[in-house]
Length: 46
Ligand SMILES: [Zn+2]
Image (cartoon, rainbow, N blue to C red; front, side, top):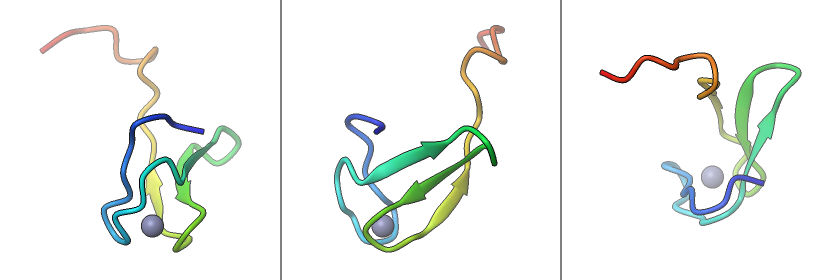
């Protein structure tokens, strides 16, 4: 579970789950999916 994240579609808090296999984030409330960007992969700070 991704703590403190809110789904942009249904506005549910703490309903987002990271799917490491597909590399996406899925909302378990409305089943909206989004592409997850692995934070460990982008070490460069802008
Ligand atoms: Zn949702």
